[in-house]
Length: 432
Image (tube, rainbow, N blue to C red; front, side):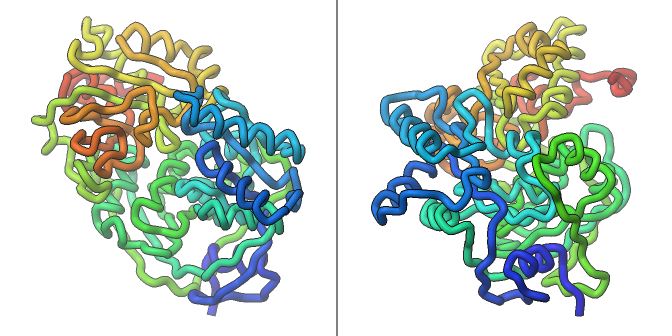
């Protein structure tokens, strides 16, 4: 009996010929990651047990991303703890505030490569599965252990396969594919399982978009999300990789917990209504919902292609004399400094500013209700981020709606949830 891509990666890292779902293993890691929220807890644990060292300073990434630039004294002190730890131990992959969000930085810098086993003290560590790595979020205690020993213990997850046939309709993106998936199986439909994505529609996606799909695997309760590497993956990695990589793929006779097959051509732009990512509705059923804020950014949809898509909508609006609705705040936050700089070179930042958006330094910002866009009681926000639980983006009685960047951009212009076709003319779809 064959193994899935996930089982193969875990078997190799555990030094075994094979593993099966349910097996308890101790596996070596290729990278441990933490941020300004989770790293201080890990540092304090290492200090508590007098562990004065890390297993490999070149296999640890520390990223200041959540509450930076520091929003208050407490967040400044959190960041200081991480800076001092990184300096003391010579952590190679330390990223200061303004560099961006870890789940954008690590792939674009080539720090995560195919075949890796990555643990991160952040639930959206599963993002890196888009490159064919096994990547999963763990607690600060587990990441402290991993930083000290270079190992982690895991229960091998069952795998679920999601196959998308056909081609995407205009304005349908990877965000819509993953929202559709979560809508079908629920927020606990993949609990402690590995979500494996394949099919024609997946292969047509860029790496930027694939990262969006695996990023939100955790919103279905998954342990990880993964897409087997192909030519696009290798082309992306070859330009960036800081070390060797290994390509794995699932065997034809691998066993899955379940297999779902869908036609991507049947999917339209979607919106997840409060208060679950699984509460999915077509945009066509959501156009009556007015908004107070629109947010384009986060580790889910703050990459360059996301900004280009949003800018296309705003350009079309500007040609028609339209800008961000006067009663709407639109916040744009590029996911990394490199994305920000390229967006400036391409004139995207000019478009956003001219359209009436607020453009901020690269950080998580309002995604987690941290700062730079927190919602007041009763306010509604449409967001490209990944969660819309009560209180996620601010007040517990505020509402967050999740959608792709084009839908968020057009909604900012219309003052209500809208379809991009309401602003972008058919002939403009062919624009670069």
